[in-house]
Image (cartoon, rainbow, N blue to C red; front, side, top):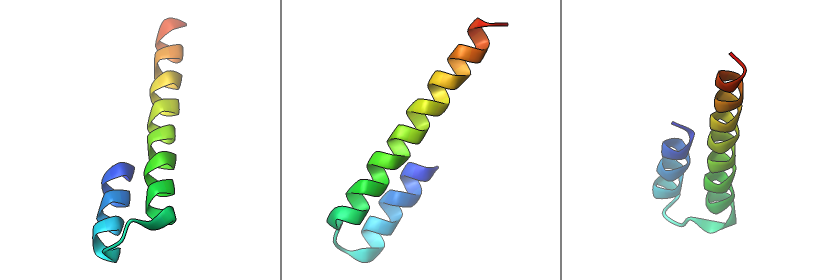
Length: 45
């Protein structure tokens, strides 16, 4: 969802710019961290 929001904001602005790219990178990092956390929790169950 965060990635979609970032992509939407890029499209709305018309130009990606540094902020748009940073948003996508941050969103990707959040998704990756969430997935890693979920896998880690699943392993300990």
